[in-house]
Length: 342
Ligand code: KG4
Ligand code: ZN
Image (cartoon, rainbow, N blue to C red; front, side):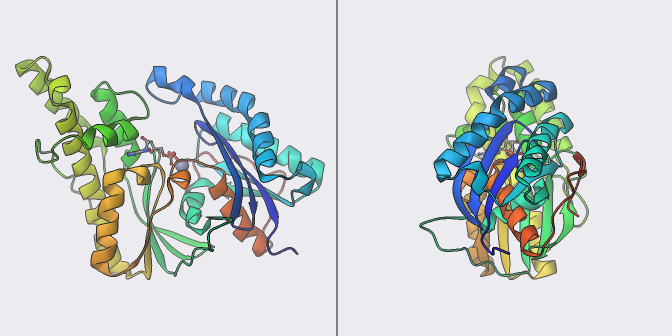
């Protein structure tokens, strides 16, 4: 068994078609084709996502192999996202990956997308040393579909200690942006506008939830009522105060995320902490997380931007650790749209 196999990884759970080639945890290529088609609908349209994956998958894999300077016959392991995600979108990647594994007679590994966001911390490029991560690690995973505090005891042991009971943090950004008339995806737009605004200009109530759980749907509704009320008094309220609204709304989301995460750190006493998922690209969250890391005197890991939003390299990282312990999936494996860490 090769301890550093050449892995082809595929991700197609939502609106990014991605393929990566890895040598162990070293990323040789990580190609991401984002689907612009959804912008005009203000959110991901599942059927359009599946069709775009079908168009993109062959050229994206081709490009990943080309950039890594390997041919498909050199690949030793094929890893692909099985879930959670949009079923039609997942099916495109899974069918492609399983067919390739069958044709090449190589092991196939079905990957949990939420584990992959966490395991992105083990990735490195050629010129970089292997990251050293101490377990147990407590990871705050914040994406468009999930918000989880995960206790990671090894590359094979994941325990959710807190999660959202309704909307995800990324969804709060996306829905908030939609209310403000900003395009999808809303997170990067709110981040950008917020940098120009005053976070203390308006105040939104921090949701109250039990233990280490979150709830974001009320926050989105309070933004809606707030702007509706203010617009009655001042018709151009949103455009006149956009930066301050974004800054105040973002401040509330980030403060809430880190308040709960800090409580979980105190309860679980991890050796290291980490951020993961699309929302970990947020500049304020990255800054406040670094401050929290310093204040707690812990080893803290913030992902490089390339591995924050959906990408195939992170799928390859999970594939690698599964392969090391001889765990491969059957070619009968199906998509698992509702899978949560197992
Ligand atoms: O992890 P991801 O790519 O997809 C899922 O697995 O859901 O996360 C996408 C989410 C979207 O909600 C997007 O608005 C959010 O990540 N996002 C951000 C930023 N960049 C992406 N949210 C806040 N600030 C950002 N800079
Ligand atoms: Zn994701």
